[in-house]
Length: 496
Image (cartoon, rainbow, N blue to C red; front, side, top):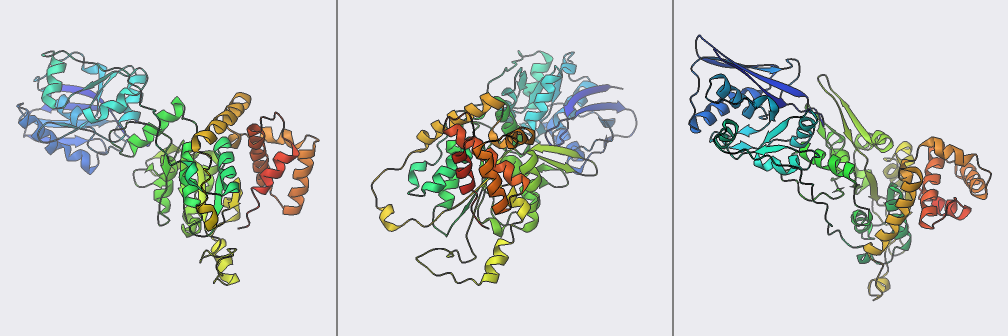
């Protein structure tokens, strides 16, 4: 009887291992069996494929059908193998004759009407398909993300019938080439909407320039969330590598119709679980920290998050990656996000406000603040107090500086850092900073005195110097001066 093999791709995080879909037709009682560590959704493809073939006008072979998914020890999930199984049956039963099949890899789910449905993770699968020198057959809904890849060669078809007509030569095959993703301007909220808050606005500018993490502390209604939501509008447009990473993470996360790619802004609720924040599950998927890759992760009401979830932030904040290890999986998701967090100074939020009296006891305040561990706070570069804005300032007609003006300075400052060292100041390796510490200068002397008086850890000293370097870049200074260190220290003066 007949035999055929079609190529497809599995899904393991951002990796897409090659999967061979072998179909064998043999004599004996009619059966349809799928082997190769197939999950329930894969085994259910027997009924989807049978229905799709019947409604598309093809004969379903009355024989013993065995579908083997190789390698056998790789777990297979989802409906991504439906199309490969259907084409394999048509080839093995000689209802489709095509010598070009080995040049293709296909991944699409089939409906009972024979239509091609999109899958999650099509972009990383196509990346590896093109790297292997093959063409990708995808559903129309996955075509845009597949075509965004360099050297893309994509074949799309709305139905199984339409695809078979192309593969058999009944109609001409249209191969779609690269069409880059749109990186047009995004309409972010404008910084001009934020009244007053001079110190917080300056901290936001420094954070945007150097990719520094920022903590805003102030009473309710002082503008902490407004400031955070305006940070993405100050950031430069992402480069090609970051755009592809963002698109791949969106694809794996199940985002349909990837269109314009901009720096993401993720703001999970404080009830978010540790798994949803970091990523994971039986089939590891990206969490909020990875979905914020290349952009901003905003954690409002920071102390209200679970202690377990917050402590899990420490590794990605330091390494820019999330490693998830399971019995059958070992995946790594990028997580180079910029953290901006907001919190009240106490449970009632009135501590330090002149207009209202705080109702919290000292013990209550201490318990509230102790939810944030020292190691986590060590990884936050900037901390500023955001006071309430007086009524007189609200009715002041003077316009505040807009995002476009600040973003221009941010872009120039970041370009200086990239030209000098190839990375933003927040990502500078410790070895570079160590050479600064050994310099005999007024700036290092000031930092030494501050380290003694404020009991700064080694990590805190390094972060102060990174921020100082950013302040110097904004001032167009080639060297870190004492005033730059002084400003960096003043922006770490928040006591939590």
